[in-house]
Length: 280
Ligand code: ATR
Image (cartoon, rainbow, N blue to C red):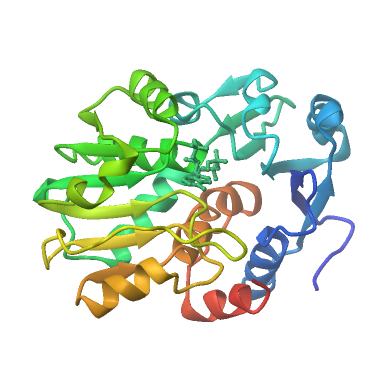
């Protein structure tokens, strides 16, 4: 630990916050780059969010990450909001500017696409349709990233179809809504499958889907990281498909925040993965 009176401060606000992996992740980088700084968990109840965010400047904080349940409500509190955060409808990274203003952005879309490109280098946005399962906050970030990458067709399937329709309405782009019941056939000719639902996570039901229709060149990315190898990824691997696990997006979405608060662009390494995995 290298914390003096000059330490740069950041943290993560959530309610509850004890499950968050972010303090371990950012503390690893602070140690690795020998930075005089600290990144702390900040338990903030929903009713106190505005108060807590407004206090950051007086407390000398350079900013925070936001997690459940604050990402959406923070949009209205920020002084400025980036285009991507507005499109996704959620803020996950806040910077306190030199004049004490709150600037909100969302790094989930860039975290998703950077992780995908690094871990599935053969995947090309133009190689074919993408299938996205789910229509929550994570799905909105994934679909925004896929639109920006110029994927020609994005098939969105969600148990509650109205949520998929809302997503399509706000994000626009080449989105095709497919009935949740047609998961198996929606995979025909697809180059990418992304699971953004909670299905397959520890203590949740399994994701029931047959991957038989996916071309052999397709990539399967599960955003679930507990367990790291979900049944979906195991099935994909057995079929010889390229798989990408959910931990990478979590690590990559943290990079811009750390860089903005602490002044160093940190690297996502295997050692970092191991450190974070040890606490999953
Ligand atoms: P996040 O912000 O992490 O995306 P979320 O907004 O709670 O989380 O979204 C969870 C996703 O998992 C949703 O797409 C949800 O589907 P609904 O919109 O129908 O709720 C999906 N999900 C959760 N439980 C599910 C289940 N048992 N079967 C199918 N989908 C499920």
